[in-house]
Length: 455
Image (cartoon, rainbow, N blue to C red):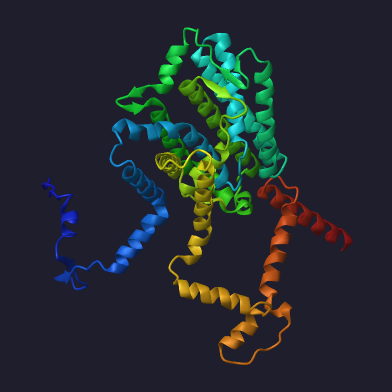
C-alpha cells in the first residue's frame, strides 16, 4: 500500500500571504499569477457586510469605550462584570421579545407580567421556604400568562398591540390588589421575601453570587441565550418562526401551523419573564407592585432593536439581543456617570430607541446611495405625483408627455391583486393548503360526474 502523502493544513493559509501563487492553466502547465491586491472597494464591502451582520457588536464596543472614557479609567473588573449582572433580567425578557418581534408581533405586558409573577412567587416562598418550588411556580405562572396572551393573539386573531396593552394594565392592577391584602406586604405596595426563613440567605447568595468573578445571573443569561440561538438557527421550529415574520401567507402555504407557532412564542416569552422574576427576587428580595419593572417593555424592545432584529419581523439574530441588552445597560451607566439625573433618564433612552428604529427603517434606503442622489429621488417623486409609469418613461426618453388610461399602466398590479384574492378565497376556511387542494379535486370530480350524467 503506497504511503499517503502528508499535506500541510496551513499551506493554503500561508499562500494568502505570498505575493505570487501557482495555478494550473487549461493546458495543464503550471503558471505563476499575481495575487489580486486588496482594494479600498474590497475593504468597504467587507466592512458593510460586517456591519449588516454584526452591528450590535460594534455598537456595544462603541458605547463601552465611551463609558470607559467618561469614567476616566476608574472602571474595575467587578464594574465590567456588573454590566452582565444588571443586564440579566432585561436580557431574558428581551430574548422572548425578540422571538415575538421576529414573528411580526409585540408584547407590551412583560413588565407587568414580571411583577405579577414575582408577587405570586413571593407567596410561594414564604409559605414553603423552598427555592425550588419558588422557581417552578415562577416559570409555570409566567408561562401561563404568556400563553393567555398567545391564545388571544394566535387563535382568537386579536391585535397583539391591543391584547398586550390590556394585559399590561390588568396584570399590574391585579398585582397591586393582591399585595394590598396579601400576607407578604412589607410596606404599601411592596411585597418581600421573609428574611427569617432558613432558605432566604441561600436564595440571596444565589442571586448576588459569583463564579470565578463572573456573576451567576450573568452566566445564566449567557446559557439561555446560547439555547435560544440554537433553537432559532438550528431547529425546524426556529425556521418556522422566521418564516412567519418574513411572509405569513407563504409560511401557511408551506404547511407551517402559523396560529400555534404564534401562540408558542408568547408562551416562551412568559417562561423567560417568569425566570427573570425569579432572578429579580434572588437579587433584591422584594418587588414593588406599583413601581417595579416600569418601562421594562420599552427597555426590552430597545435591546431587541439595538441587537439588530427588524421591527418588521423575519430578520435578525437572537445573539444580538444579548449585546443589545448590555449596550442599554452601559448607556444607563453613562447617563448616571454624566450626572444627568433620573428624571431625564427615560427621555434619553426613548430618544435612543427612536434613533435606532429610524436607522433601521431609513438605513437600507440610504445604503450605497449618495445623499444628493437621495434628495433628487425624493424631489422627483414629489414632482411626479399623479403621473403614470408610462408617462414618466416617455418623458425620460425625451418625448412629450402622453395621456394613458390608468388601467393599462396598472394592469400588472391588478393581475397580482386578483391572483392574491383568488388564493385567499381558495384557502378561506381550509385547515391547510393540502386540505384546500383536496376540496378543489373533490369539486372537480363532482362537476365531471354531473357533466357525464347530463350527457
